[in-house]
Every structure is written in C-alpha cells, then in structure tokens.
Length: 113
Length: 115
Image 1 (cartoon, rainbow over the protein chains, first blue to last red):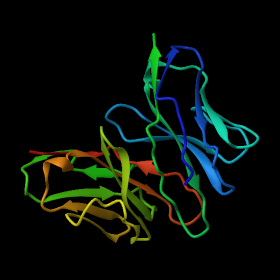
Image 2 (tube, rainbow over the protein chains, first blue to last red):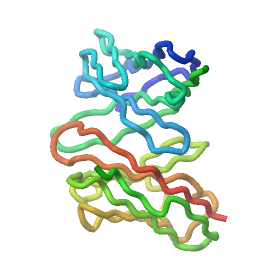
Image 3 (cartoon, chains in turn cyan, green):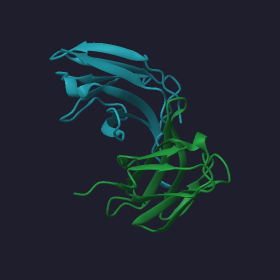
C-alpha cells in the first residue's frame, strides 16, 4: 500500500474546525483513503473513507484533491473529546478479499479549550 | 451490537510463561486481524485471516508467536515463551470477508506486561 505523510501534531481551538492534512502522492487507482483515530488507551476507531469524491458523514468530511495525491480530514466543530491521534491510511480494495490497514505515525490532534 | 471482544483486558506475567490472548470478532465477520502497539514501533500488523485461513503472517515477530482461528467466531494469539520485549497492547480487529474494502472494526485491546 502507498505510504502517507502527516504532520506529527496539530492544535485546534474547541468549537473551531480541525483540518488534518495527508499526502499520499504514490496512491494507485484501486487504493482508497481511510481515516481512523485512536483516543488514548482505546482501539482505533473508523472515521471515514473515500476514493476520489468528497465524502461526509456524521463524524467528519473528507476532501480529496483531484489528482488524489493528498486529502484533508475536516472535523467541523472540534470538541475536547476529539483529542486523539488521527491516522490517514491508503488501503487497496481487491476483489480477491480484504486487505489490512497499515498504520503510520499519524497526527496527534490536541483540542484546546 | 457487540463489537470485537478481547480478553484478557490486562495481563501481567513472568518472563518464560505462556500467554494466550483471545478475540471474538463481530458476528458475521470472517476476516480477522491481530495488531501490536508499542511506543517505539506504533501499530504493527502481526497476522490476518480471511475465512479462518491465515493470509499473511509476515508480521509475526518470531516463532514464539502463533495465531489460530479455529472457527469464524474465535481466534487466539499465543506467545510461548513470553519475554519482556513482548510487553505491548495487542489489538484484534474484524470485518466481513466478502466484498471489497469493508470497514475494519477494532477491539479495545489486551494490555500485556511481561516482567
């Protein structure tokens, strides 16, 4: 799977939008962009994923550039409970079966009151 | 709905002892993944199964580690003999086997300390 590059840490004021960037310049056609987060001492939690179109769910929005080489996860109104490590992962979808998630170091987001 | 269930949640054991970690995937899920997390190495994939068959075990650190999935509702990760460097959080995750790119769900982890 393609590797991703994320800033090691970011701060965000409570109530403001948190925009977490991710570079994945070597992404290939069958690879999706996934975002997970890990709150301290818990298992990783799925947030959202997408291929090339922007995606939105109840947790976040995912904006993928037209060339698919980078993306941004947006938490529209960050709360203190959003403080976590956020992982951007590129994962291939194959007809032959499931593929695993390969985690990098992620971005440590601190939401500040 | 019950999520991925792991046991034990915490274990402290002495070096040389056998450790068995257990995982019950979400009902209906036939793909299962074992990960290990340490401060130094982050989250690492150890092994994963599709339909109870091991697909990739290249992440298993050495022969002291073994994993089985005897049926669709149960998996074990065994360390024998355990060493202090095996201290870590071990996560199990599952998803549906058929279909492309199904969401993977994680358990809360088993915290292992080997002294």
